Length: 279
Image 1 (spheres, rainbow, N blue to C red):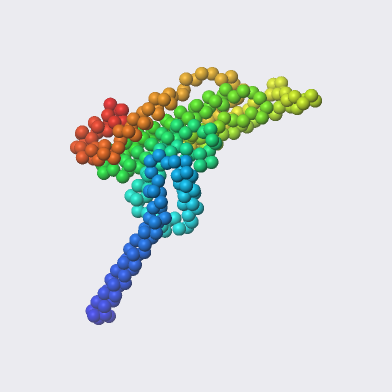
Image 2 (cartoon, one colour):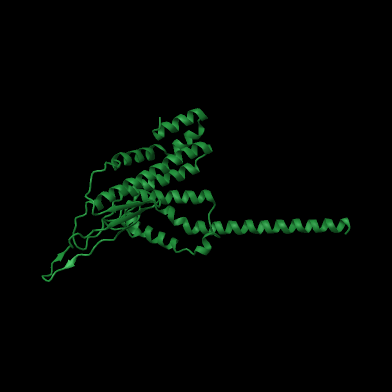
């Protein structure tokens, strides 16, 4: 094979590769444009929404959830844009806790922990987007994730206390599901007996059974309904926890993240420790 032939094959290969890369780039930009158009209405909703706006937003969010899974990867946004969209969405839920009811949750659900949950998620995403050194970013995110775990544990412990204090009566239902709980059910209990006069009587020596609870982290809890409730003193003060989360949310703004990124290592470490209350 002479040099001229090798040269032309090389030129052809390079041209083919460049054409393929150019086509791939154009196709990717077209996909980005399509998905940006689909998600653009998300940014039409911000701040505190009216009841009608909340309804329209939930309907729009449901329609997005029906987006073909097979197309989701093909039309995925760049990572930074995905995070910005997610932060905007989480902020909407934080400012409009009523939206959690559109998730199919009971109407009497306590939305306070959800507000703090979405606050934490917003801050984690914003920290990921911030121009911070990896070590500083990891320190902040780890603290926020720890707050999330405390929030779940506090909610589960409060639920356990409600379960322990359930009155013993026929057809007893468990309390309304709380934030952070994925499953809760009673097992092993004896049934009430229907007497001839139509009354229901619990069999002597019968057992009420146990309640199995699983939280969002996969932790399992068991409550024996036949053991008299006692004050364990385990529950963390939700007021103090909510106050701590609210404080960090108010202080860790975009402006503050930008300020932290401009500090030198020593100053930044001290500022983060002060912010997180770890001094």
